[in-house]
Length: 184
Image 1 (cartoon, rainbow, N blue to C red):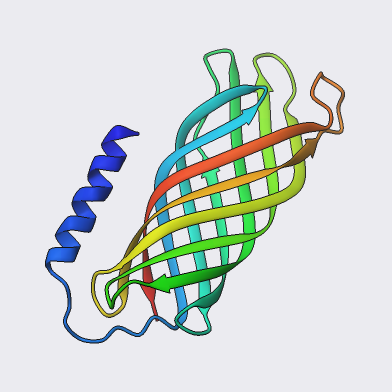
Image 2 (image 1 turned 90 degrees about the vertical axis):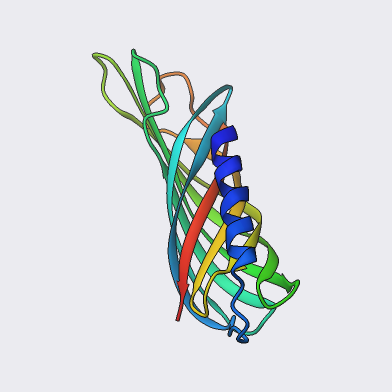
C-alpha cells in the first residue's frame, strides 16, 4: 500500500512538471483501467490486489456519469479462496482546479459479488446491492491521456442461497487505486 502511494505521488509530480500548455477538453467519453489495493470486510477483513475498469461520459466540466467495476485477486488464506467484486453506476461531480488537475466525488448504486470456496467444500456465492461512494484526483497528462488516484467504497447487504453461516451479511469493499484513462 505504501509503495502504491509513493508511486502515485511520483507519477503525479512527473506529469505536473511536464504540463501541456494547450487547453484540454474534459468533456465526452472516457475509458480506462486501474490497479490498486482492495479490502473486503464482513466480520473479518481481507485485503489484496484489486483490478478495475471504468468508463463514462462527462456532459460538461463538472458533471458526468461513470460505470466502475473492480475485482480482487485471491483474498483468502491457504485454506480458503475468496474473491470479491463490484459494479457501480454513479453520477460524478468534478471541480477543475486548473487545466491539468481536478478533484471528483461520486455517489451511486452498486452490485456486489463475493465467492468463497473452502477446501473440500462447494463454492458459496454471496450477491447483493448497495451504495457506492468515491473520491479522487485526476491529472491530464496530454490532451487525451489522464491519470487518477481514487478511493472507492461500496457497502451493502449480501446473501447466499446456502445457509453455511453467513446468510444476509453486511459487506464493505474498498479500493484505493491508481488509474489511467483515455478521454475521447
